[in-house]
Image (cartoon, rainbow, N blue to C red; front, side):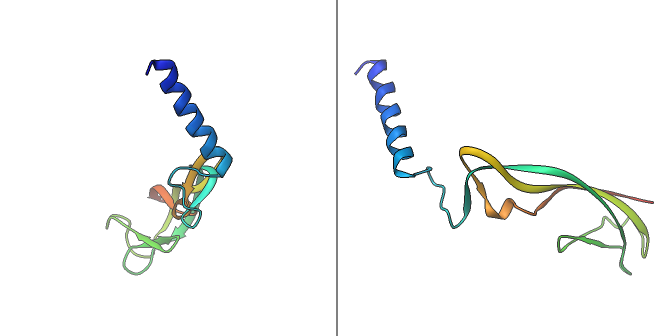
Amino acid sequence: MNENNKLSSLALANIEALASGEMGNCDATQYARNTRPDTKPRTGTATTDSQGYFSLGGVKFSEGKIGKNKNISYTYDLGYCMDSPGNCCSHSHVGKAFNVAWSNM
């Protein structure tokens, strides 16, 4: 089989998969189809609790350097799925905070 035939077989397999609605291992119960993971920058303010923690999306953050009942500012990247034909994005990526950083105000 020459290289042209190999490419033709691969192209045919891709066309068949697209025609049948297949997207590799993109299980619709776990992934949003025709999207890809991305993030949007976000900022906010909070007051740490009596143990020096603040919560973002139900997750507590602190390195013990903030202090109790302190006003802080924070930045993070919020996960979402953006349009991207032929790709998949995990539902668990949506709403997840990435690259969280904070400082005293």
